[in-house]
Image (cartoon, rainbow, N blue to C red; front, side, top):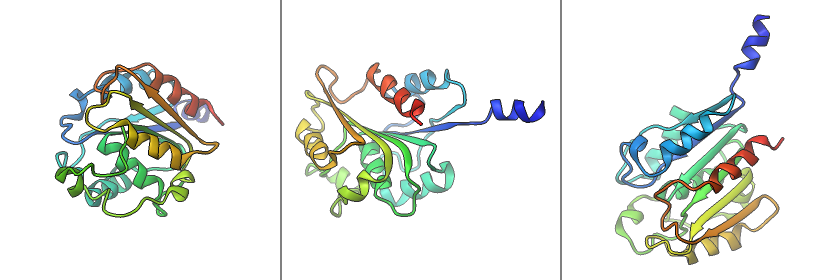
Amino acid sequence: QESKTKKATRIEMKIVIIPGMGCSPVSTSNWYSWFAGEMRKKPNVEVVLRDFPDPNSCRESIWIPFIQKEIGLDDRTIVVGHSSGAACAMRLLENDGIAKLRGAILVAAAFTDLGDEGERLSEYFNRPWDWEKMKKGAEYIHCFHGIDDHLIPVAEARYIAEKMSGDNFQYTEMSGVSHFFRPWDEILSVTDGMIDSS
């Protein structure tokens, strides 16, 4: 009886929200708490929604070790990265020291620093991307981008989609969402699909 109870409460999936630059406190930023709340309604799903160190620079040299040591990733993890957090998720995908993830959702992602000094200092854009390795970093990868994104031009995401094209990658372009500051239902169905896939 006791073992059945333990099995019923065992975490089957972990979702890690990687925030955008300057999002502190994370719990009151953008759509993060809404999304976490929706995912926490599901049985056996743990959602990691917490403040990250170095929130205004989001440096890779700080964030990647923090995620690896403080949060932890494995093949039952879905990472959801927004803006600079999406760049972080992309570097996680190509990292040999990280197990293949269940999924990665990239929201308003960029592959260049766009000439922005702050983005350049984040360290994600200081070397080429290994697209082939990135594709293999998760079972499922989905990228969302707003056609009217005023911070990261849609051309950035289209280039990522071209490079990431494959059986495990999907790209959704949306209008009227800007840089994804508010909730949108499509992320729920995409995440559900990653959770439910075996």
